[in-house]
Image (cartoon, rainbow, N blue to C red; front, side, top):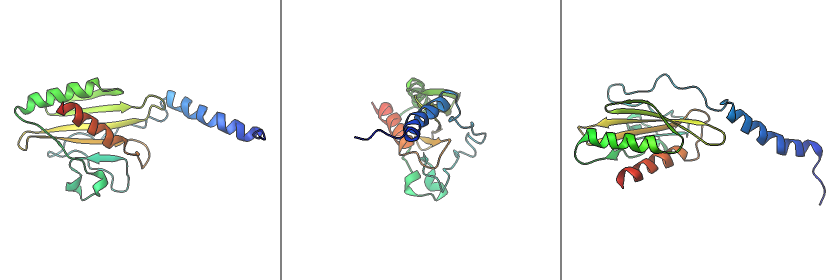
Length: 160
């Protein structure tokens, strides 16, 4: 077997090392959005041309099925259900709760190695007995299903 040329070897070792260093320096975290939160009972809509977010309110914005996820349904007291959800999110790996008010929760989820940040929001809808959810990557146009998986993990924890 022929040895790798020095430049190819340097790239094979150097590029992953640079990516890891960039992550550790929070250069891959992106900027915290300044347009999050509930407005007229709605969370921020997914970006139509990106495949990096899911929302239980996506159908209201006429996006593709990729963006759509079901809200969390609950029985009984909405405030108690939302408090339970808040505890679940706080305990999840990589989660940092940024804003927790009665009926609204905003958390950042950071990946362990490259420290990419995703923004997740939850909004209580007591009239319909659901909690709306939204999760989106800050960087890139694709998330490879990470945001959907995260919210489905929240759903599984909430249901158990």
